[in-house]
Length: 373
Image 1 (cartoon, rainbow, N blue to C red):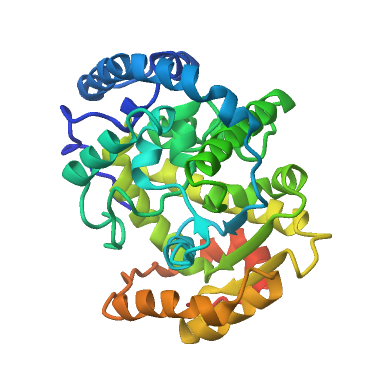
Image 2: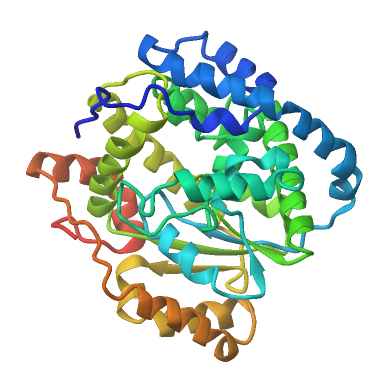
């Protein structure tokens, strides 16, 4: 892994532009203002944009708070799986079901102003966002599905995305916002912000059922079960060697864009090891007691060998709707993606040995061999 911060954009707004000045202040204070000099220009620009947006935030709260509060959230569908396990493709694919709604990229950019400035955010996104994602060349754009974790990072302090802004505090954010080991008060803050976001998305989408995807929710299954007793969960897993190498590329791509401080590759490798261990161990414990009518699992490699067969199984097992009527929507997307090739990365023998030693429990749990993908 080699993370190159030399070409990090200095004078482009940071993702926190869609937050509020108060939230940015709390985030900086929590990290003791440890922003490195080269990153201050884009952070200051983002703070100015946040101040500019503040009147629209107040107007939206004034006009929509009561309606949001009264909104009932239908039992969501959660896509689970550690980062780079195939969750994004599954998210894109299932979003083609016309009965479902999802959090869009531009909504993550400005969750406080979905009603007052949503069109403006969408148009800005169309102008400035790349057409593909830097880590895997998958399609990207303002109206594409996006993990709601990015919206959460602009709403308040309870988002694991903040670890990408302050990677030196990666473990702190994981324990605070994923496993909630730093205290029950952090769990309550996350639940409050998350429910507010889901109510807002439900209201905006006229009551449609939400399709949600955040890899970090994989470690929050206990909390999600309690919040939404009738929710459905789809867990996708992938060979640990592929997961590790793909996560290295992920952080090489996103940290120069999002980080406000530099970090060494050894620290990020340990962050990958640690967060995968904790996420998957929590999932394996917390899936106990969930009936097959609520939780379905699928292997990344198996899914791509027979997408129709696995989609049909998921829909029938979880009772998600009439698969035969929905299949044409899925089929169209699958055909469009036939030319897409996943990136191929290798591990050194030493890395393979380390991955197996640290993640043997996952190799065993999901039936993967240690010799390779």
